[in-house]
Length: 334
Image (cartoon, rainbow, N blue to C red; front, side, top):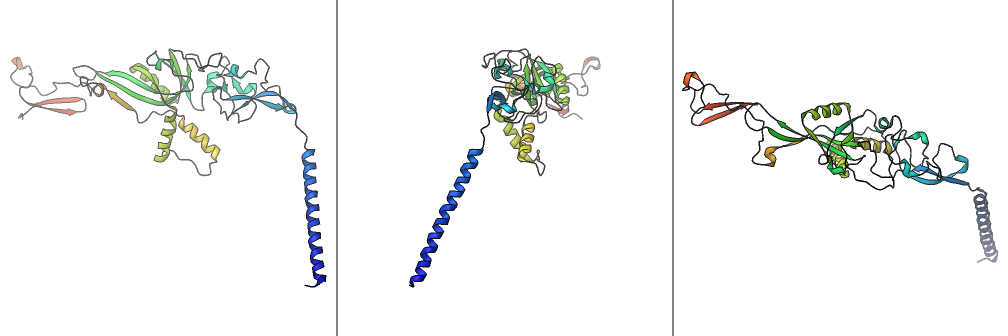
């Protein structure tokens, strides 16, 4: 190889190495200067912020709020600050969110309404919903194990007399499903002053319903006795999945994931008054009835009675039922 070409090649390699080292030092120095130039934001006292998204009507529990340091320059007088009399999260348990609060957003005093404040129950209701109170006792109220925020089914127990002889038909029917409990008596949280769950019996329960369901419950109270049936948390998602699979629930095109999540949550929490189920006395005991008592002697008068008085047919008969009316016809009669 020519000595002149070899010298040029070595010189080019040396220049390339020197250029790479200089470029590396230049960019590293600029990055270090930029990082050092960023000033630290001074943090102030801790304020109450939402641990998760809190829609309007949410009842505050221990998993709703947390204390977090907040920059001094962004502090406002409306925030709940640690160390102040109203800055303890335990004192806000059971209050209701009046306006939507996003996750990580500081909670202001105007965003929460307490049980003693005007408009508390109205704030706990979702848009278009109503509140109705149902009397219960220890057995019909699940022995006090129903707490505000739970979902229950409403069971109506009654006796249907019918138009005939014999005992009345005993029947229990699940008339409404997936009702949200707003309060038990005037208690809107399951925690005591120490933040511990407290089981306590109650005589009244307030439920969140639609206007039509409120009418049904008002009529049901005059028909018989009402009982609460506590629902599992997993039942709501199971019912929702079945409705989505059947095509009863459709999400509009172009809906964002957050909007779809909120829509599904609202649908999962709505009360249902269709596809009701029931059980009669005959489903429980073989000695009870399965149908409404009907008349047993609605057949045409049979001859042979004294003074033309109808007498019961003698021998084999055929009973023909038309609705609640039963006609007894002797076999061979014309």
